[in-house]
Image 1 (spheres, rainbow, N blue to C red):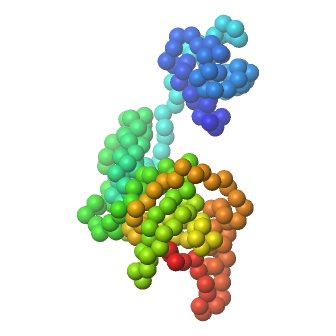
Image 2: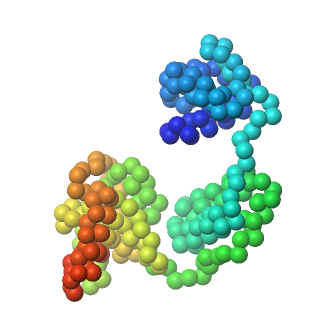
Image 3: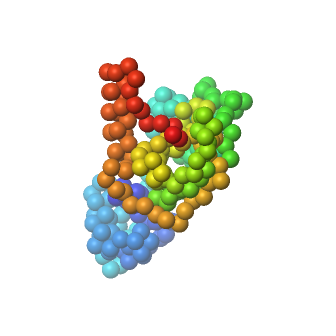
Length: 243
C-alpha cells in the first residue's frame, strides 16, 4: 500500500470509530506500530485534528472531513468520456468497474460540480462493430496482475493455426481490436495477439518473474527501435501480430 493510501485509510478508520489504538491501526493496515505513530504525527502536523497519545488511543475531532474532490470541467469530461469508452468497448466486468468509478467520484464531488458529470456532452455509442471474442478478457487481466502464464490456440491473419504459451505483459486497445502484448515462448520473442483470434485459453498455475529482456519495458524499447528503423528503411522488420 502506498503511504498516501495508508494515511487516507488511517483517517477513515478514525472517522468510523470513537477511539482507535495504534495496535488496531497497525493490525488493520498490516504495518508496525512505529509506522502508525509516525503517520499520526505527520497527519497532525499537516492539520488533521487528531487527539490522543501512544498507549491510549486516538480520536478524530468532530466536524473534520476530507476536502471535497475538485476537478476542472475538462478533467470531468476526460473522466466521464474515458469511462464511457470503457463501458462501450471493454468486457462486462471492466465496463461495470468504469461505471462504479464515475458513481463514486460523483458522490463525493461538490454540488456545483456533481451535475457536470451527467451533463457532459461526450459519448461513446454502444452500437458499434466490435471484433467478437471467445476468450475471457477479465481472466487475462487477472493473469496480468498475478503474473500467470497463459496457454491458448491462435489463428493468424493467413488462417494458420498454432498453440501458444505466453507471459502476458499488457492489454492494448486498437479499436475495434484488443491486443495482448506478450513474451511468446514458442517464438522466443515479443508478440501481439488479437483477442478475437484467440480461443481455448487457459490461465496456467505457473507464475513468472520479471526477467531481463522479457518485460514490458523491454518490449517498449524494442518497439521504439523498430519504429526508428521503419522511418529509415523502406521495408523494416516489425513485431508480428501472432506470427
